Structures are given as C-alpha cells and as structure tokens.
Amino acid sequence: MAKRFPQVTKVIFDVDGLLLDTERLYLLAALKVCSEYGKKYTRELKAKVMGKSEKEATRIVVDYLQLPIQPEEYKEKVRAEHMKTFPSVALLPGAETLVRHLHKHNIPMAVASGSSNWSYNLKTASHKELFSLFSHAVLCGDDPDVKAGKPHPDCFLVAARRFGDNPDVKEILIFEDAPNGVEAASAAGMPCVCVPGEWTDRSDVTAKSTIVLDSLELFRPEDFGLPSYGS
Image (cartoon, rainbow, N blue to C red; front, side, top):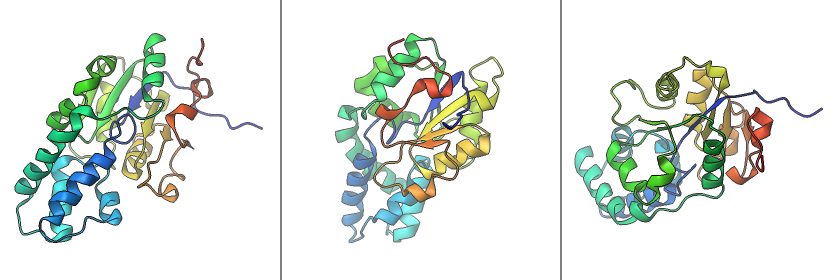
C-alpha cells in the first residue's frame, strides 16, 4: 500500500542549500578565512553550522577552531567573500519550477531561514522576481520575534502566524536540507520534505522527515494534496 502523506494547504521553504546553491559558497568563504590563520574548516565543522544564524555560526567557528580574532572580525571577513559570490548564486534544480507552480495555484508560501537580512538580500539579488512570490520571509538572524534559531521551532511558528489566518501547523509543509531544520519542523509539529545536500548525513534527517528526496525535481505535489504539475 502506498504511503499516505499529510495533506497540506501552505508551504514554508528554507533557502540555503534548498532553493539557492549557497552552501558551497559558504564553504569556500570559510575555508579561505580560516586558512589565513592556519586553521582547517572541516566537514564536521560545516555540519555544525548549517542552518544556524550568522551570529551563532560565527561564534561556533571561532570557538571550535580557536581563531585568534573576535567573532565580529571573522564575520566581516567572511561577508567580504560573500559579497563577491552571493549576488550571482544559482537556483538549485527544481526550485524555480516548484515555486512558480505553487504560486500559479495560489498556494500561500513563505521563507524561514537562518539568514540575516543583509545576507538574504545579497543572495536573492539576482532572483528578486522569484522571491517576490513569497508572502513573507522570516529571517532568524535578525527577526525580533524569533527568540531561538533552528533546531528550535520559533522561525517556522512565526512564519505560520504571519500567514494571518491562524493555520493548523499540521497543514503547513516545510522544505529543508539540514538536520537542524528538520528538527525545527518536527518540533513545530509540521510535516517536512528533506532534500539533503552533500554535507548532510541522511541518517541525521530520515527519522524526523516525512520524506527524503534527492532533489526538489522529484517532489510530487499531489502526494501532499497540492495541485499536480500540469494542472
């Protein structure tokens, strides 16, 4: 018998590594800055900071590698690298097709990301029209209503409230790529489609995800009660 998935009416997307191919750019920037101090930014460390707010990720890196600089200086050095690469970042496969399809069928959509406003505006600069299709964006790095970032559920619950019609959390589908985002969705009581990137161990996301896919291109909207492609 085919698995029965929750039937949803609204959608919330993560951004980094899910809609935009930014995770490798975060990695390149961190590798460059850390190497200036003779430190190696490892895969293990990358996994620790995925999905975190900029402030928290910065602190983790500086403390973990014992860098001889303050977190604020590390942040500014990394931001200088991001300014070179983020404005031309590409969309990941399936992202634009899915977003435009849902918008065409008037499915309410929002973004909930660990990004700061500064970072979000920079990396969506060449995709402004697409991101204008979302009703709102909750950016955990700056939003005063988000008291704790992922894996806490705050960002998703705030995003849900801002739809404005008191939606049932069980009818809001989350799209994530990182373990802490999947945990946040689970803590919020929301079903979650996980599309893990190359830095995510599937064993870290399978248990709390509703479904795990290799690409957004493989998502079947009708499985969750959403209009099918071609409709």
